[in-house]
Image 1 (tube, rainbow, N blue to C red):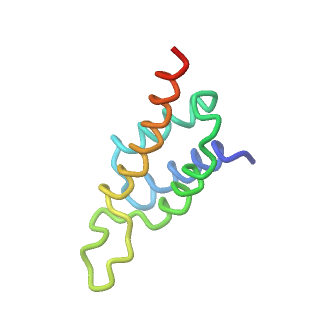
Image 2 (spheres, rainbow, N blue to C red; image 1 turned 90 degrees about the vertical axis):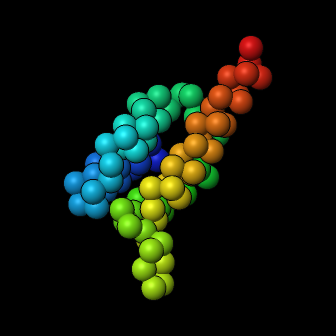
Length: 92
C-alpha cells in the first residue's frame, strides 16, 4: 500500500475513532486525492501518519501532554501545502 493510501486510511480512522474535525480531514483527503502535486512529500506524509493515531482534540493539555492537537496537526499540514505552493511558483 502506498503512503497516500495509508494516509487516507489513517485519516478516515482518526475521523471515526478520534474525532478528527472535518476541516482537517478534508485538507488531508485533498492531499491524498492529488498525489501528483506532492512528488517529494514522503517525509511529511510519514510525519502525518505518525501524528494521526495520537490525535486528541484536547492534545497537549494533560499532565504529560502526549497527544497531537489541532494546532500541531494543522502546522504539519500547512508545511506540506506550503511545499506544494512553492513548487508551483518555481515551475511558473
